[in-house]
Length: 504
Image (cartoon, rainbow, N blue to C red; front, side, top):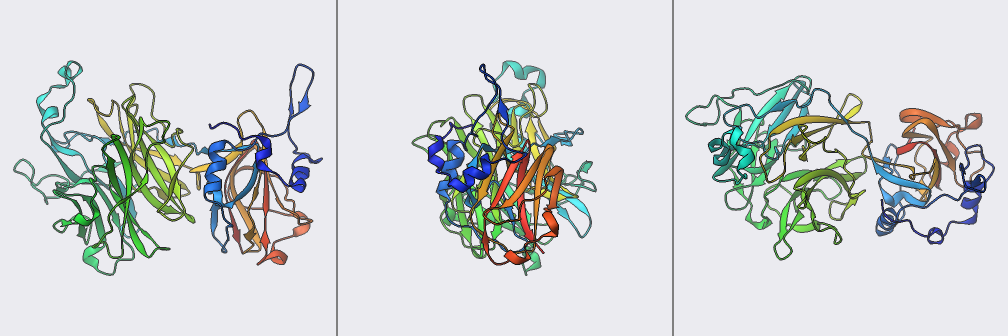
């Protein structure tokens, strides 16, 4: 957590101070002191969060049904006694779901998995990129590896395919498509691409280009296309991107830009730094030169931005950001966000979204998130590659699953050591007659008020709720406020708030 900002820096208006300090049943806690209990003012946001909000300053608007995530600092005007923290994932007890167990899976390494759910045939589908050839692995018996450092040599990466009916039990079908060691009885769909990002493009009019692959080719960045995800066109070189691309490359459609956005890797050779690069294209054929969008913080250059998987969620863009710690030789998965895909900020730097497991466990060494998170049956599924050793050492690789609650990437909650906190939104256009929130409010509560509007103070909301209707006294709703700019005051007591939405 960053250092606190002095109280005066928030410059709270007097009426907000009165609301926060007034005779409400859910006012701030009493704090024990040697001279007896006394009521303390709430601490402000951390410096990290406040500066992040200032960097993205500007009034936010709202459209009906548009979900606002509390990790978006553009919507926050003032905050007292709260902090932004990552959501808590639950790793599946059946992990790992599959592992390196085929002759053409010499080493999963970072796995670079891509997972989607096909509505048409109700199947989960995964494309992943093991090293199908790694002479260091094949020439070194397992019992000798503790005494011999791992030094990769003569490696080749391929793209493999697996599928599942429930996303838990996976099969690796023998496709008969790609030759390996004189046989096509394997689940390979392509040999050669490095760090392939793969997705199905629902807006593509040409069936032959419905599935798209974005990767590092033999000489430059490249793309390939498929009608079914199995049969792929020859790679099309994309030298104009001018990126090294030795990472999990990925791409997605940005509707506000009317462009495809590609995420890849650049290098700052002078500082020996891995950078996140961004490129864009109107047609997935002609791309811009990649530009840097994220790198290590100046004060911790040993924690480098190794890979980022970008995607749209609600009304923002999120990134699953792999941070490589060159001191410990481990990799953690954090969260990043962007309003426009061009400027990215880390969410809670140094705090993992998918934490590594305990020493010796299947994911104790490295975590590499898959592209992309899946919203499925009331949860967010975060598939990932985990490994049980150091990044540059011997390690076994596994395909794994972690879960998040809906909208649960990050949320606002009382700051450490405090039971209550409050935040005030920027003026937002009231675009619906109802307000709904998503929060974890057990055993505490969330209360919502419309700032400087009489009669709009909600009943306390408790429990774990998703898109829960906020109820007002006397059956009120927002019909009278529709179209007006309003500010919402959220008071959190032992609760974590993720999102809110105007509906109806």
